[in-house]
Image 1: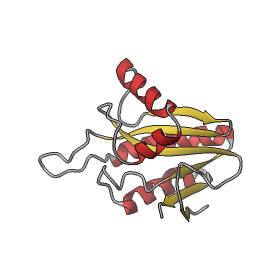
Image 2: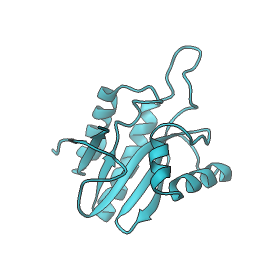
Image 3: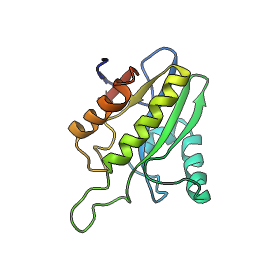
Image 4: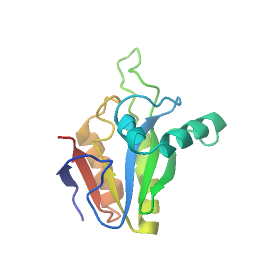
Length: 157
């Protein structure tokens, strides 16, 4: 089985040849304005506008769903709904929803195999969503790596 490739750098500037899908986690309330999405919006306008349209349409806009947006000839951005709201609830439960992230990555895996793409991401779910990387890493192993998809995780310098 493949292992995660850890790199220093910017996940919006993938370090690989061929088709690439940049994945990141979005919330289920249509909010786009903090965290990694800002780096995406700086480079490309389409992922944000498509996400907002998707939210407005209400069509299949649920935890565990994905939206893949082509931003360059060989690069796509995948908006994954893996976060419930944007702040911890009254019981202190963070917004990350691991089961939704797993559903998203299972879908991403299928799409990546169709177009022979590698997957690129920051440490998803560990910033504003309040998740733990060990949990996310095990989900990546159970989904993408199990399907033999090449995975790159970027730590910003």
